[in-house]
Image (cartoon, rainbow, N blue to C red; front, side, top):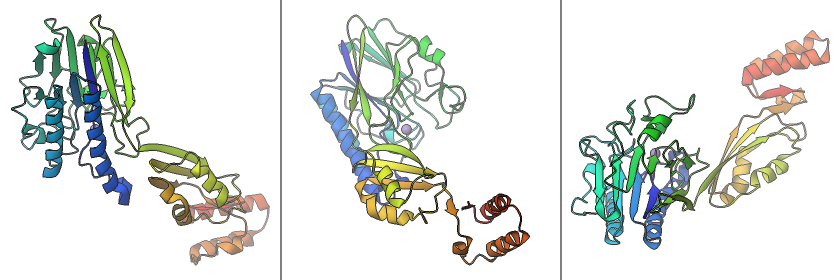
Length: 369
Ligand SMILES: [Mn+2]
C-alpha cells in the first residue's frame, strides 16, 4: 500500500495584483496554507508527497521564501516522508531555475526533477517508481508524459506531469499538451497533474487528476482550495480523497439589474452567501429602471466591501433614463443630438429608439424608455 498527498500550483511569491490592497494578506495566506498541507501530510502518515509544478510563482523568489520552502521540505523528510517535486510553467527549467538551486541534495528522501536525462526515481522502500520529465519551457508543444511507460519491477508506477489536457476548443497546443491517449498509454497507476487550478478528474485508462491550487491565487478559480490524498492498496484499488485546505474562496455572481427597484435590493442580492474569506466578482448587466436612479458603485463598496475578503463589481449595465431633462451632463454633442431628434417629432417609440441608439453611441451608457 502507498499513501500519496498530491498538491501543486502553490505559486509561492505570487504578486496577486488583482487583489489590490489585499494582495499582501493573501500572499501570507498562501504560505500558511502550504504549512497546513505539510502538517496534514505528517498527521495522515503520508508516504509520498508530490508537488506537481509551480511550487514557486517565478524563478526569482525572495530568499525568505526559498528558506521557507526548504524548511518545510526538510520537515517532511525528517518525518520519513518522500518528497517529489516537479517543475512547472512558472518555475520551469532554465539556467536561472530556482529548483536547481534548492539546497536539498543531501536529503535522500527528496527528489526534484531537474534533470531531463534522469526522469525516474526509484523508491524500493515503497515498491514505487515515480516518473517526471522536467519542463524546459513555459510554452511547448511537447507532451510532459513523452516517453514515460510502466516499469513492472515496481508495484506502484506514478507519473507527475505539469501540462494541459487537450479538450477540443479549450486548450492550446503549445501549453504542454497532454492527450487522453498519452494518459492511457503510460499505463500508470496514478498520474499527478498540475497546471490547471481547479481540481478535476481527467482519468482515461489510467487514473489522472489535477489537484488544483490549494489556495486562491486568481479571480477565476471556483475549484481551488483542495489537495488530494490517494491510497493505492495491494490489490491496486485506488481511493481518492479530496481535502479542503484553502482559506479563501472565489465566486462569480451574475446579477441582471432589470426589475430591481433600488440600490438596497441590489445590495441584498450581492450580500447573499457573503463571508469574510470570500472573494466575489459581481457582474451586472441589464438596465436600471427609473426608480433605481443612478448606480453608485463606490457607495456599494463603502457599505459592504469589508464584509468580503475582496469584492469587485464589473458593471456592464446601462443606466435607464426617462426624463431627458435630467441627463444634461455638459456633453454638448449629446444635448444637441437630443434637441435635434426631439425637433423631428413623430412616433414616440421611434424617437425613443433613435435616442437610445444615438445616446449609447455617444456615451455607451444611456437608454431611453
Ligand atoms: Mn500554475
